[in-house]
Image 1 (cartoon, one colour):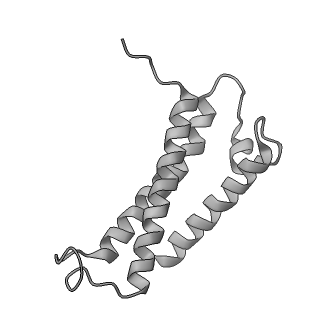
Image 2: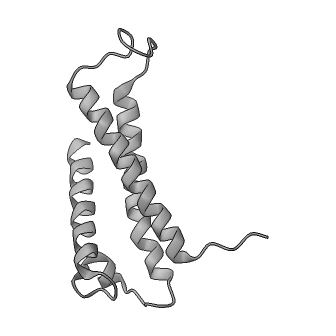
Length: 115
């Protein structure tokens, strides 16, 4: 018997996915900045680190954008679009939500400026 996943759990999992892919993206960016060559060093294969870095950035932004959107479908507590975009007076954890939205805006700014 499997239990259905709640919207709050889905939001949590999307947040964890966003943090995980952003961490992987940061590590790949550090490898690129240090001019790491996977051909000369381990795993001795031709891997395009820059393309992998770009795709992990896209996945991280997708997870980060869908993470707060799920909150709009919660019954209790009720989130409005204003609470998602500017979470100063959000129903739960306004300070943490404000920090998360600032991180989201900086991530999107970095993505748009890199295009």
